[in-house]
Length: 494
Image (cartoon, rainbow, N blue to C red):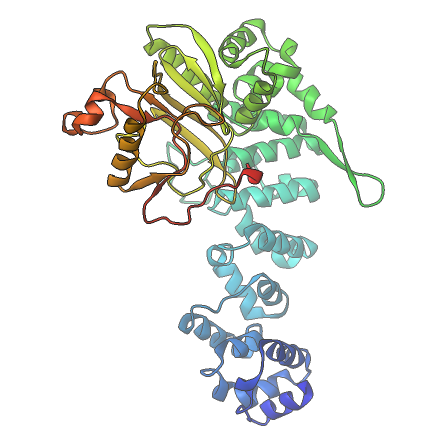
């Protein structure tokens, strides 16, 4: 079938093509692209078929220099057509015009699958350096500092001997300058993402490069990034091949020993590893630093609940540790009561009274809507809210700060909860959780005063609310009335 179809297209017969399945078209495309007569075949059908089935035509001609301008026209006219990563590879390898197009349009090319496409290009240009010096120069000084970082990492890991040939002053290129003649030097240069710079620094440490390069990069990181991932890179385990198809994780002796050489500064600036270091290597940190850290952590520990350490470790590992320390000190300073206590664990968080406030250590949320909870006078106000989501939008760590409400609502008459639900509905929302007496405790309490409600003018609030200022304290599972199928975890997923 494929041979007959190719012959018919070669002879200008296109009438049959619309009756073919996607699989058939893919098979024909492959046959034409592999044919030594591809140019002659295309010449027979292209002008007749390009407006009828442009994608089929594009998939055949995109890396043919004779038709490259036609391919660009198809992209412009039919915006669902584009160069995917496989096509990028073919353009680079087999099309002179396509290769020039990639060179001149890197921003477009790297808008998708940046790492896959860039690493392919890097592999090709370093396999033939002589004919790709312009590519090396372009990528080594690219204005996008993440692209520049990926280039640097490739060189450090695979071609370290070329680093000082490509860069006359390697450290200078971690900022946004290219050192081109006539370049305007700014007083506030751009810096690479700290994640990229930390990875570059560790790669330099692990390589056979002069260790002074790592030391200079470390100083740059500590100076410019009060929170960074360098300690994490030093502690990350090494993945090594194991038996069969398995891998094993080995302790990073090189990284750990390097951490010990500058433990205080690396601890103080670590974005994610402070709690881990506190639990495992506190003796390596100056006692005053560790004493201050332990004082903050002491507010969130309970000897009867060992799992709290796991929750704290999770918060710190997602970069919320410094905010936890900040909020603890900040809200204690605002409080008349300077004591703290563990209030209990809910289904998704652990609650602590810190002075006159509540700080919640969030593990997840039932809801994973874009807006987790609306602002409403019937819902307690969050003074602080930091929520970390995974790639599915599910909350995996977080912090919330609220006013501590002394008054329980469990002795209220049922009519007040009915009124709460009616008022919430009148505001355009409904709740899928219990208000009082749930398996994880009460989700409602009473404000000290209706004037504390999250509302621009509390005097305008309903009289029944002023008399009984009942509010939801668990800011979760509240949805718009129009949202009949909310994004909400099932119990088995939590």
